[in-house]
Each structure stands twice: as structure tokens, then as C-alpha cells.
Image 1: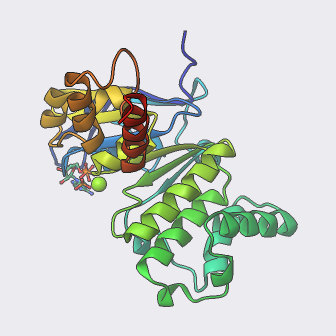
Image 2: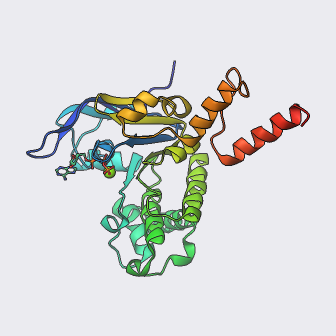
Image 3: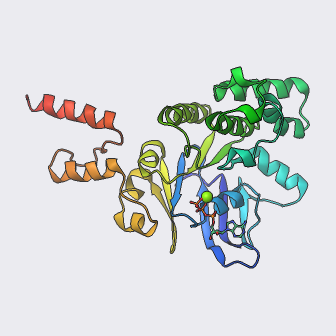
Length: 284
Ligand SMILES: Nc1ncnc2c1ncn2[C@@H]1O[C@H](COP(=O)(O)OP(=O)(O)OP(=O)(O)O)[C@@H](O)[C@H]1O
Ligand SMILES: [Mg+2]
């Protein structure tokens, strides 16, 4: 039997004031230690779902539980939720507000009433994790977009959440910035943080995630990333294309170059390694 979900929505429905239902009767799980990619077309409700999971919005129906306990939406309940689940919104300018990087990253831990030494330790740790220690004293309004994104993530990391939810964290980053961010996220995962990200990048999701959740008009479908992201029917419903790696895997299987349960390549490097192995094995 699989572990119970750390964070779970059950039967959740949500509509913005005077708007149509964005999500209805939704069940959604965040399982500890499983990197989860959330995908779906523009307007499908990814951001809304992330705000429901982090307590910024409250479901009209259904409920949110953390560790099996229902979340209460009073000050104490929300503080408890935010020490477990942290959301980083897509646009860093919606999140950053303090004058300097260090002040911004300190805000959450200070708000928890932690002693100064503890705050300093957490801020130093978060700045190091995001590779922005050198920017500590920099005014936030002078940062580049990628630096602002890192600062916003550092602010969430300084809360030492068990679950870090990132809304399109790689959008707007250059290729090197994307790679550095993925390396950072790997470090956080290794340190025990469960990471959830919304993305439109199916190739990135296949490469990065353990599980993929596809928001479709008929509900959310979740499964192991290589399985969910090979379902052309679901992908089409979610307004997505087949990831490059899944297309190559289909081709390799059709040609008999991949057999049984052997996993397909998720990156160009993995394809190159596979090709070397096959060509080597066939003596060419
Ligand atoms: N504050 C709001 N007030 C009213 N309607 C909203 C609000 N925010 C989002 N919506 C609507 O809710 C629906 C879901 O929006 P949401 O932002 O969750 O989608 P999304 O999947 O994150 O889209 P995208 O890929 O464009 O970021 C959309 O129809 C949107 O217009
Ligand atoms: Mg969104």
C-alpha cells in the first residue's frame, strides 16, 4: 500500500466570486518525497489549485488535510499550514516587497517569531541553496528577473517547508538559469523537501518529475511521469504535446531497440548513452 498523502484535497470545488466553477469535486494528493509536475492548458486551474493547496484560497466545498488533519483557516491553522507548505507564485514581483534580498528572505522566519540566531541561520541556508549569497544586500528592485525568481524561492525555502510548491518556476529563465534551478531543486529534494511545480514544459516534466498530474476538463489524472506523459489522449485533453523523450521511446520500442520494462530516454544525454550502449552491443 502506498503512503498516505502528506497534503490532500478531497472533493474540492472552487469558483471565484461571480465566476464559473474552476475546479469541482477534485481529489488531489501530494505524496511526501515524490516530485510532482502539474500540467494543463492556460486557464485550466493550476494556479488556483496551488493556492488551494497552500491555503491562500479556501475551497467552497470539500476539504484540505495535512498529515491527515483537516486544515483550519484561522490564524493558527494557517500559520501551521505555512510551516508545512510554501507557495512561490509565478511572478516574483507579486512576492517580493522588502528593500533588500536579505530582508525579503528574512520576512517569513521573523514573522514566525523565531529567535534572531535561528532567523539568520535559515536565511543564510536559503541564500546558499539558491546560490544568491552574494546578493544578500542588493536592493530587490535592482535584481534581474532570474535573480528575483531565486530570491522569491529563497523566501519560501527559509520557512523550511516540507512541501515547496512552485508556480511555473522556469518560465522566463534562460537555459542556464533553468539548469541551475533544476540543480537547486535536486538539492532541496535530497535534503527531504517535497517539490511540486506547475509547468507547460512537458520535456522538463518528464525529465524532472516522479509523478505528473494533468488537469483536463474531465478532472485531474495523476500517474508516474513516464506513464502519464505518454498518454496522448490525456495530453491532448490537457492541451499538451507528447514529450520528446516519450516520442523517442515509442520509436525505440517499435524498432525493438527497447524491450520489456526498460525505461526510455528522458534527455538527449540519456539517448546518447543508450545509443552508445546499443551500437557497442551490436559490434558496430
Ligand atoms: N482572481 C480571479 N478572479 C476571477 N477569476 C479568476 C481569478 N484568477 C483566475 N481566475 C479564472 O480561473 C480560471 C483558472 O485560472 P488559473 O489561473 O488557475 O489557471 P492556470 O491553469 O494557472 O492558467 P495559466 O497556465 O494561464 O497560468 C481561469 O478561467 C481564470 O480566468
Ligand atoms: Mg497559472
